[in-house]
Length: 61
Image (spheres, rainbow, N blue to C red):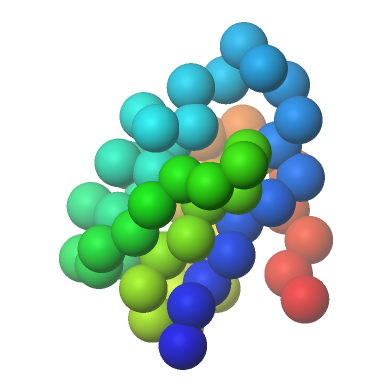
C-alpha cells in the first residue's frame, strides 16, 4: 500500500521538505518522484489533515 500526494505543481514549494513533514507525521518512509510524494502505507486521512493544516487544499480519492 502506498499513499500518493500529487498535484502540487508550484515549483517554489520544496517537495523534499513537505515529504519530510508528512513522513514524520505519518511515521512512515517515503520518497519524492517527479513532483509526487509517495508515502509507504495507507495514510490518506492523516496526510490530508497535515496538508490542510499547512494551507493546502486537499481532495482525497
